[in-house]
Amino acid sequence: MAALDDVIRARLDSDVALIRTIADYIIGAGGKRLRPALLLLTARGLGYEGAGHHQLAAVIEFIHTATLLHDDVVDESDLRRGRATANAAFGNAASVLVGDFLYSRSFQMMVEVGSLRVMRILADATNRIAEGEVLQLLNVHDPSVTEQRYMQVIERKTSTLFEAACRIAAVLSGANAEVETRCARYGAALGSAFQIVDDVLDYSGHTEDLGKRLGDDLREGKSTLPLIHALSCASTSQKAVIEEAIRDGGGDFRQVAEIVRSNGSIAYAQQRADVLATSAADAISVLPKTPYQRALINLSTFAVARDR
Image (cartoon, rainbow, N blue to C red; front, side, top):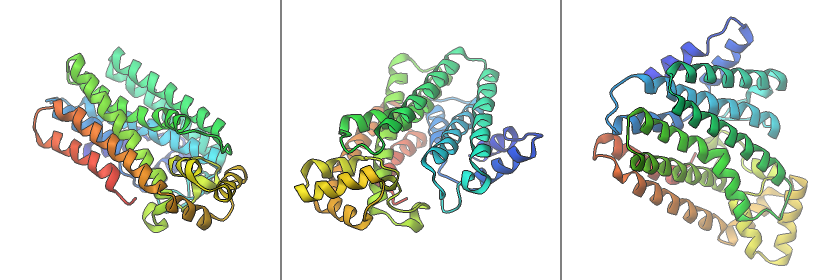
């Protein structure tokens, strides 16, 4: 991870001062670095002994960071990881353009690796993420969003990059098709579980732990799994409260959160995440029994047990 950070800092350098400033601001915000960590662990778990995984892990992190920069502009967010978002600190235009810089820098770095297969995986993943963003935009302020539509969004918007990280590690390591498929399945299941828990924490977490305000999803008019489940089993009057809150992007968050809790929707969503995490752990069982494999299994537990 220290080597990864060295690559990130080196490749974020630019002679354009504002790019350096915003890049330093983003790095200073920290973050879990979960997606690149998956690539590093999977590659080592498959016996890879080179250094190319650091560059590709940095590419994964750049793509993820670019999506966050653009997301925050689209969602009009002003708080992430406990401090002002880049768009709040530097403006929407600068934030979008630096996101574009990160995308283009990641393209340069993929080409340097010299693997057409890796470039194909990353190109497809980036395109699929964009599809997920548009699907989410179509779902905003729509109380009729179903669990199926919700899963379509998170499978594209979140799971895709987890899946790509693990698949690239398998390709880099020269794994056979079956192992590559199992690694990709691990990443996809883990990514979906991770996003569902993120959405659960928006109703059950604490602002100081999450680094963002509770209820942001509701204020943005997003129907996430806890809310979708609550709508499916709430009373008529409770449904009216939720539907109005989704349409208006507001309402009384405490009242909505209580309806979500009282209908068992937090527990339902958590159980869905637990099933996905178990599926991820099963998929990665194909790897040799090493500390790297154990770490990957532990990450599937962390994804659903975390409080931030």
